[in-house]
Image (cartoon, rainbow, N blue to C red):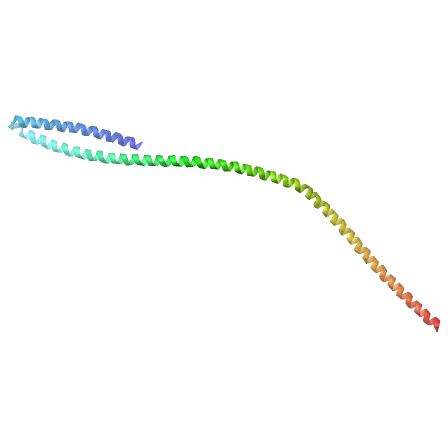
Length: 185
């Protein structure tokens, strides 16, 4: 936007410069014509014209410098614009590439996710019989504990009965010995 306005300003300045150069050429031509005619009363007018010519020349030089500066500025703006445009195009291409990569990774992600969900379903399917086996094992373990406890209790009862029987046998033996020892004597 600014580049166009500077270009318009440069064109306008060139037009003004061209018009002033025409005026200058016209004044120079008039001055030469008068000098050739040699009219002495117009000497003051010639000095005035010469002064105007010098002023116009200075204005022309100043405008030429302004035009040159504006052209340089317009050129720099144009280069900045081109550079920015190239950077924008590059960013656009990079963004397109990143978007393409992202879509590819998204496909891989969904494929991986689907595979993971399938594995999870397989694992759950395999886990069900395992869970059943674990429950059966736990029931078996409880039965075993119950049987072990019954065996321990039965073993303790047997020990008690054995001790009682042993005590009874010892008492019988003692009583037989005492009978034998009293019967012998």
